Structures are given as structure tokens and as C-alpha cells.
Image (cartoon, rainbow over all chains, first blue to last red; front, side, top):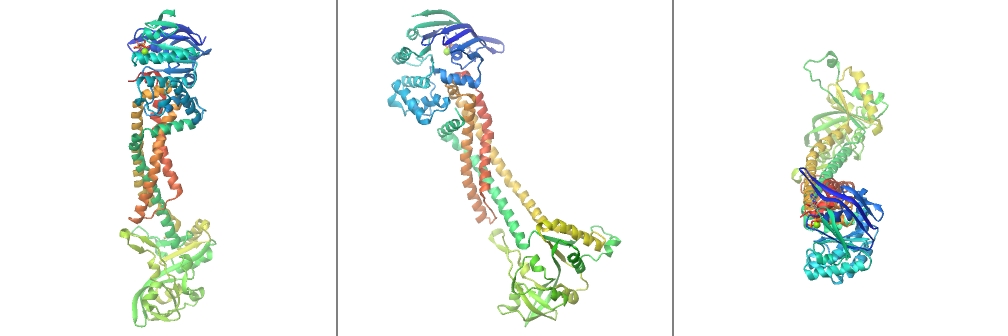
Length: 226
Length: 410
Ligand SMILES: Nc1ncnc2c1ncn2[C@@H]1O[C@H](COP(=O)(O)OP(=O)(O)OP(=O)(O)O)[C@@H](O)[C@H]1O
Ligand SMILES: [Mg+2]
């Protein structure tokens, strides 16, 4: 099992009230699975995603990634896991605005360390080619369409060859046609064996996945397989 | 990411924020330039002081002067003391093992004539040690000898300005001049002594001209012919070496105290005077230091503020960087490097501006300056240090940002 969570909880102490974003999530995901996480707004999807992506740590519960107890890691160790094992795709792309696509996509390699500048560029260009952006290497994000930006951010998520691709509402800011193009790329990656986890409201998007996990109010409400 | 890569990333990132970098830089440029100017002025002043004292006579010199009692009534011992005398000088020469030269001086002004010219001129009674003690080479002829002193000889050594006043271009050696009617044979002419301090308004003044305006005669002749006793106006002695100066001071003190029975004299090394002068200059330099410090400090505060603003502006970016694998340490180094790159660039420009300022003070204000590699290194290090110190807090803030909150930040 690639991902295994046991009774994950996450609460935010806001003084007077305690917000319980997750209230005991137990979930297992095998290597190569294509999973959609659905649920209404505020149900805790992003929170779960951040914990799976090692951006956040649970309040209680265990999280084992690739056989390693991640819930006990801190700081630099977590950063390394994020860098090597996880590729993030965000709803609003989150590319660095002032540098071109090659520089944006190279960034995970920079934080990986030990890769020469030339080699980094080479790998970044290859990743951009894989998502069909060969003709946009020198462009800055604001010179691109939303679909192109999302493809660039997928390239960035993949450049380090992580074991898991996490996409939080990847089509949320895109029109339907562009959204379908992005989903086609994720489908392709899944077919190549990558573990893909997509968070979405949209059942059309969720339909691309082979397994759907529905979250309501911080717990898993339903699960189903396509 | 290793340190080198972090530095590269920080520097690259800075080059994408050029506008911000320029604003930040101004304070650092001024601060660094001030440091260069301060240090160059300090060194210039020290150098000039040292040159001046070298020219005056070396660091082996000790000056002995009469110390006047401050109380109205004198003690019996004070009344009995003859003050500094020629016999004191002889005693020091005889009894102080560390002494090299002894130069007793009595100064008087008399009418001096040659042919039909008569002037009121200064006569300095002294002995053979005078030119060595005061570093005055002979231009022509010879100086006063021990034999002259023993024989109370009527011989005179002339300062170059007086020689010109009396003789013009005419040869003077072997000629006779009269001092208050007493004939003196000219046996030598002193070399001209010069040290120009550039005064205000660019006027140069030879501060050693008083050496040139003097006649030098044997002190014994001076005492026998022109004075009622052998009291000295000044007594300068020098030690065998710079290291022997403290020993000689002690020896001279002991000899004089034994002879006077009371401490009515003062023994002071010339190096102490240099010390005092340097201390005075150091005081003036405090003003410049204050300017440099304030500029650097203001520059640093501006940097810290702009860095903090840029971090707020870039919170999402920090979140993204963390999401793709940047550790807190990576971001800390990145932002610190950005601060240091800015201040180092400002420092480099500041060095140029500082060199310009130094040239201006040197050429226009006529203040002595000296720029060394050490000064440039110190000034540049100051600018880098400002970057490190004032970049520390913003960098720490960036490093500590929670990635999830940073990504949520609107
Ligand atoms: N830093 C925080 N402080 C307080 N409450 C928080 C914080 N982060 C999240 N929450 C709360 O936790 C709950 C779950 O948030 P989360 O972002 O995971 O929801 P979501 O399912 O991703 O919603 P959406 O579909 O709108 O993105 C929400 O009620 C949210 O208000
Ligand atoms: Mg969400």
C-alpha cells in the first residue's frame, strides 16, 4: 500500500471555537490508483490533501507513506518527502510570475539538489514537451492561457518523477473544454502507472477516476469504484 | 538544496526584482562611501602626523622642560632650585647610560650685522648634538663641535633663511659677522628644512621655517658672552633606541631630581605627543563615524522593511516553494542572500562613491587622505554585514511561514 491513513483528525483551535476539519479519516490507496476525492465545500478535502501531500501534519492519527511513518516527520524531512514523492497541481496554478516556464518547472529540481543547471533545464524542457508546451518554453505565466498554465504546473509536478500526483480542483479555474484537456493528461499519466489523486466538486471530473471517495463533514461518507 | 545553489537561487531571484533592489541600495551606498571616507581621512591624518614627527626628529626624542609651580607661595626647595641648567645637561650626558644625544638650548634675539646690513635675529646656543637630535643635515661647512664648546669659540652656523638675509647669493663660509658687536666666524650653513601643511584655502605654510630662521652658536659661548647664568630654555635628549626611551626617561628623572631636590621639571617623550595628536584626530573622526553608522543603519532598516514587504507580497510564492520541496532553511538562505546581494552591490557602488569623496576632500578641501586595500575591504565588509544583520529577521519570517497558510493567503 502506497498511502495508508488511520483515524486522521485535524482541528483548528480558534480560541472560542474549535474547527474540526477532519474527524477520523482512514484511507488506503495502492500504487497506480486513480482516485477522486469529492465532497461539498468545507468538508475537509483540501485539508486531507495537504496532509497526504506532507504540507500539513494531522492533529492525531497515523499517516504511512511508502512504508514510512510520515506523521512523525518535521521540517526538512517533510520538505524532502514533498520534493521527492509528491507532485502538486493547484486550482490557481501557482506558477512564479516573474520567471519563464523552464525556470518554473526547474524549481523542484533546484530544491532536490545535486543536479547541475544544464541537466535541470534539460529535464524541465522534457517535462514541458510531455504536456505539449514545447513552443512556450521562454514565456512567462502571464503570457499564457489558463490551460497552458495548468499544463505547465503539471509539468512542474512531474519533473522530479514523484510517486504521487495530487491535484486540488485542477479544472476549477478552466472552461469545460480546457478542463477536459487537462483531465486527458491526468488520464494518460494514470495509464502510464502514476498514482493520481484528484480533488473535485465536479462529478464529470470525478468520472475520470477509477475510485471515488466522498467526504462529508470531515469523515468519509461513501466510497465507490468505477 | 545545498548552500551554493541557494545562493544562486537568491541572486537570480534578486535580479528579477531590480526596481526594489535599487531603492534599497541607496542607504548602503552612502553608508559604505562614508566608511571609506572616514577611514581614508583617519589614515591620512595619522600618516601626516607621523611624517611631521619624523621630520621634527625621531621617536627617540625626549623633551625636558621647566615645570612651573602652580601655587602662589614657593617652597624653600623650589626657591633653591636653579631650574634647568647647562650643568644639568652635562650631568645627563655623564650619568644616563641610555642617552645618545643631549641638546641644551638657550635662545636670544640680538642685532646681527654683516657689512652694512643689520637685523634683529634669533641666536640659538647649543652643541654638537643639535643637528642629529633635530634631524638637520648641514648644507655647507660644518656644525658646532665639542672643541668649539670647550674653547668658547666665536663661530656661527647659519640657518638658510638668515644666510640669505645677510649674504644673499654671496659665499658666507669663512666670513665674519658681528653679534651685538662681537665678531663671529661663519663655519657652516644648515640645510633648508621644510614641511608643508596645507592650510585652509589651499595656502601652504612651511611649519618648520623657524629652524631656517636661526643662528646656531656654541652654548658655552652664549653663556659666557650673552647671559647672566646657564639656565636653559629647553633641553632635548634622545635615547640609544626607541625601546630605550622609557629607561632614559627614568634615568633623566632621577639625575634631575637629585640635582634639583624638587620636581620642578617635566620629562616627556615625543611619541606621547604623537599619541595625543592622534587622540585629538580620533575625536574629530567620531563625527564621520557617526555619519557612516547612521547611513548604514538607516540603509539596513530600509532593507529590512522592503524585505518584509516583499515577503508579504510573496507569501503565496513562499507557499508554492515549500509545496514543491523547499525547506525552511532553503528559504531562509534565499532571502538572506537576497539581502546580502543588494547590500553587497550597494557596497561596491559605495566604494566607488567613497573613492570619489576621498579625491574631493584631498584635492578641494586639502585634507590629507590615504586609501589602502584594507580600508576598502573593511568598508565592503560593513555593507555585507548590514545585509546579514538586517536580512536576518525577514529571512527568518519567510523560513517559518506555514506552507498551508501561505498557500491559502489571498
Ligand atoms: N487555518 C484554518 N483555521 C481555521 N479553520 C480552517 C483552517 N483551514 C481550514 N479550516 C476549516 O476547515 C474546514 C475544511 O477546510 P478545507 O479547505 O479542507 O475544505 P474543502 O473541502 O477543501 O473546501 P473547498 O471545496 O471549498 O475547497 C473548513 O471549515 C475550513 O473553514
Ligand atoms: Mg479545498
